[in-house]
Image (cartoon, rainbow, N blue to C red):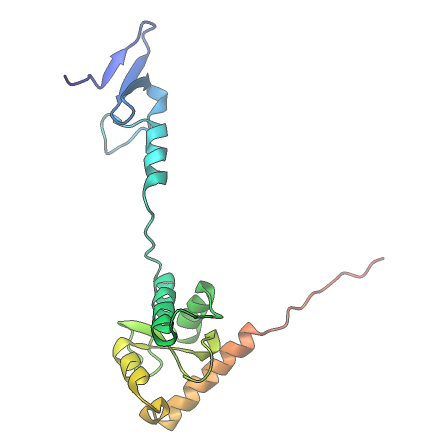
Length: 178
């Protein structure tokens, strides 16, 4: 038997039926919605279902970091120590490479790679390239032979800027005591 959505209690107060907890609750226990004419779930059940759902991240920097870690695990086995975080990825992608490939200035299908294969993976050894360029770079025995002198010097100067920027000493200013 279908339960009525609203009903009045003995005092004349309106109560609504929550379809999840199967209880009649005061109208104040329901969110007002412009989409739904009558609330079907109480506030408590809405909060519980929100917390219970697994949150998916669509943060592109977190995804890039995950791909970078997976590539390092694939190459080096399970022992991977990376000195790079999501905020470093954001800085490198947005501020240094301006969301474009360092090689072709393309802005689609981007991936981060280790520029110098012999150096550890750090923000100043990461270059943003397209996935096709990444495959070519990673397959090459001597990847620097793939690029012109101008490209290499441009990339190395930007990587030096990243290193200098991230290693800036913290300056503390104290007001003198009077």
